[in-house]
Structures are given as C-alpha cells and as structure tokens.
Length: 135
Image (tube, rainbow, N blue to C red; front, top):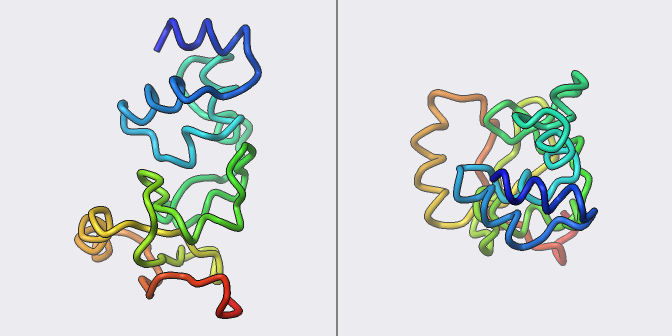
C-alpha cells in the first residue's frame, strides 16, 4: 500500500487501483471509496479520519450505515449495492443504531452476514431495496 499512499499524496482522486488495493486487504467497498479513509491512511497510515476524529462510522457490524462517508459513491445508492464488495444487492440490512438506514448486500455476503447476525447488532435483514417502491 506504500506506493499507493505516495500516489494518493500526489492525487486527490481516489483511483481504481487504490480501491482494489484496499479491498484486497479486507476494507469494505464503501470505506475503500471514502475520502476520510484515504485521508487517515495518508496522515496516519493506519485508519480512517472519522475514527481518528472520534466520529462514529462504519457498517452494520458496528450498528451504523457509514454516516460519515465522503466520496464518489452516492449514499442514496447504498441500499442497491453490497456494502462489502460493491456488487448488486439482493437484500438490505438495517443497522441497529440507525433505523431506516439500509445497506445493500449481495447473495454471497448475505450468507456470511446471516451467520454473523446472531453475534452482532444487525437490526433487520429485509428484501432488496427498490428505489421505485417509495423506500
């Protein structure tokens, strides 16, 4: 990731290579596209600036739906893409501390999340979100 950090220092834009590198290290699709994530990597080398600044952020695994996200993805689309990998969502998950805020999940990650639901604060797993159905 060092060479990508040097590249990011020269460029403000989050590149596909930066996203791929972060994803290969287990970073979620949404975090890998977040300016605060990359700012933290550049400044500290280890974590997101939202967390460094004490702002709660993250996925349903911490009861949230990325409330501090800043980047090129449209948060209104979060229910339609898998928050883990970015593939098309087949279901939505509602985080425990953010009722009504839904994150999408693909079929592969849905099976993983269903196993984790018993151990974590996932409020609800529902059908795929259709923006045309009024929410």
